[in-house]
Amino acid sequence: MEFDTDPEAAAAARQMMFDMVVTDDMLVGGMHLHFPGFGHMRREAGRYSLVAEQWAFEV
Image (cartoon, rainbow, N blue to C red):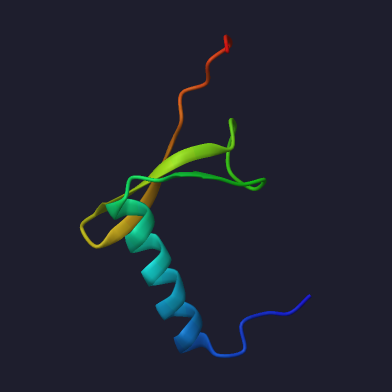
């Protein structure tokens, strides 16, 4: 496992990705997110948060 070796570049890359996800209102997913594992990111007061997607029991 390899961790960020350049903290400034890592922070800039994450900032760019978070801005893109928020601007384009992309659905994000991941194994380490709360159930159901999908949501949308929001930016409020210079901070990011994840709003979980509503779970639907029907497809």
